[in-house]
Length: 139
Image (cartoon, rainbow, N blue to C red; front, side, top):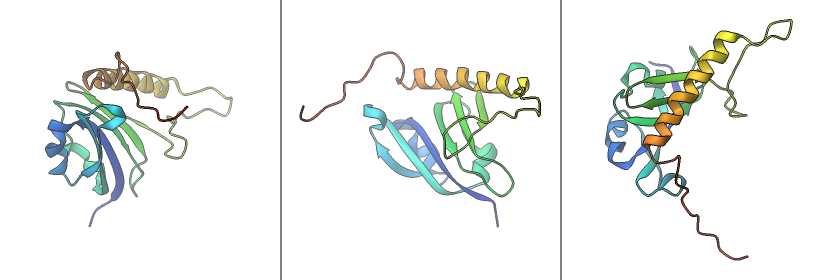
């Protein structure tokens, strides 16, 4: 048995086979208008692939909660991997707040670190900087 969840990852097309060996399937080619990027999904990711994800290539994504862990966003810049808790429905990051209304500083720090790694991953994937012109029909 296992603890399965739904999981998506965005990476370079040339790195797709690494994720396909884990059970991911192509979901979208040309992610976000970039022909060299793909989005892959695994509908039955066992323990969100835990320590099986690569640590030496840039990618980012998210997974739903399993029975023993919560939903998370994750990113790897090719050197560092980081993950944070998310609310799958809103897409927002999770920060616990005390009864006095004070956000947990440790969790805020984790979110800040995640954003740094995520930004580096997106930059390595060509998603930051130059804008890709979208083809607009009509109007």
